[in-house]
Image (cartoon, rainbow, N blue to C red; front, side, top):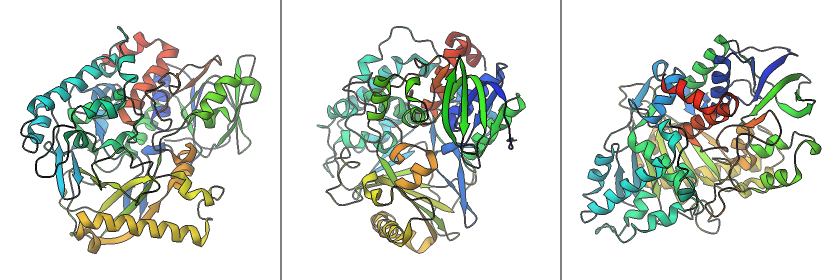
Length: 506
């Protein structure tokens, strides 16, 4: 399926990075007859679509659930074009609770279906029917300002109305609606899954609204692992004449008289008229000679703040003990979720996201559990220049201590998990950095900032003729955001109206 070996060929397009954005661009352009080559630095393609296996159990690295995959919903309509909706096994999460939001002992369900979303929260906030309906109207209105969410061409350009407003302020108007028993405000519940977008006060309202709208529309896991997405796309790209090369760590990009030369650590060179980078823009620009990039542009990209990183514990479980949860569990130590990622001076961790692995459509017990929380890169600066497997005993002790602290918090909510654990694997910001190539192991790449959305927006078409960006930094992170972003990138090459029409027709 994936070609390997020594090549020194000329291609129409070289794509750097085989994450979701790179593979989708490779699919679109190879389908349109372009001679495409995708270069991947690791031994297998997929980026955050990859899974890994420990002790016979498979774990997700980045995609734990996706939204808007129901019939005629946004992601399903896009993925129909890529053949993914027919080739992959999906399992819908609990319709009455795809995300459980917990503050101490108090739990609140976030449900699928917009009417059902309000109905399931209403018993906890009995006087807030109007407020819940207002929230739903609001996110519908935000979505309507982004036509590509509905597979439509940009038209009235109202995006700025929502890229310049903060999610934090957007939700504050619901803070006076309070659960009587817990005194938890509705605003905190609506922000309870903000780990999905980094939970920053800088996050524009369009980011949170588009993500939440997609999950309320329909939330799904991929049975057997998200690596099936990359496998399906790789198979399609190569069947359409494309080339995918693993173990090709790009270290240089140059351009002479309109032709790009892409060099790799292995000493190979690839030539093309166009390049699409699916890796972080700052990492991409660092591979180019100074004269190739405008200094002001490079300075802007390098200076942009990235979203925070994560600390992750992967658990292999003894069989038949811990139940499979057909929802995700978002725990918070306090109702203020907006400082959890940044607060180094307060007890850590202050939140966690727990997700059980989905291995079968009918699953009674969990085989794996993944637990994620925020971690600042500064926590691991001591080992910044080390490599995997060579970080020493002090680093191993650091990981173990942090893992123990995180699990102690988890046991408060899930005491039965303690006796079910068979093996533990641990990931830090360094792990994520080395795995994804994202500076400081950032969860979602560049931090979008409502104060200056143009500054923190990376356009797919650059000032370098024939050079493009794709991936989570150009549009929106997550499966849906990256999918739309790949279409926008390829639309710059093919014409967006032409491409959208093809996608609309399946």
